Image (cartoon, rainbow, N blue to C red; front, side):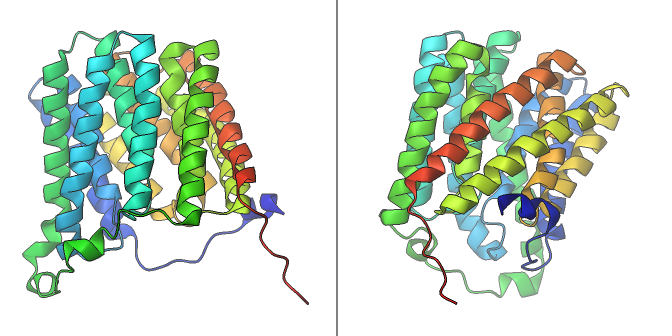
Length: 339
């Protein structure tokens, strides 16, 4: 049964702490630095650049050096489109679908791997939301996020300072990005992303147009990169329960009213914990992901500690996760094993 996965951990595929440490530094250092310089809002935006290091986590540093610039470019492009659409519910809705489908086509077509198109959708939505609800100019926002991507890339390249790391032969770019081509499984994944994006936007317009990106993001996260019906149901269940628990964690942390350097440290600890467990237990990871995103978004928009926002995110996640899980029905049933 799918619920059994809530009480078990997937096997480990090697140490995760190096990637976890890179991600933690990528999100906490910009906040700490800009707080000390009296420009904390820019630090919150730049911290989103830490999403760059989450890709190609199992690849050698010499290969990541060639993959991550494309990821960073995709994140910056998503931010540019987000700030251009800011203030218009129609443009944001159209943009969410376009970014989700385009991001999925590129991620699946060139075998980018986990976490797939999710963060391109989130960066688009966050960019549109922050620019529309704060006084930060679109240009400053994009420059800050791009700077965060560059910083995170440099953090990810730190292992290349070691001679033994540089001694590894880099693979040709063609091997790192095979394609563009979509096999049968990838085509179904792309179709699922397109369907949940359209339905998520329509559902978001009913719930609250400003929250559409979260509904779609939750659905795309459940789609993931695994082409299997059971995986869809498991990820949907994990995302629903993990988000509810995570909202409770956020409520407890919000009572502390974290800010400045303490907030930077807290977000770094949460990011480190996420990367340690995300490949082994998705629900547990969501218990850390939810407060991290809520704290970061709240800090960027000035409403940190809002219980109303936490409640809204639970509703949005339940709706999106249900869409993502239901779309798993498009996959054929796995053949039954013979005794």
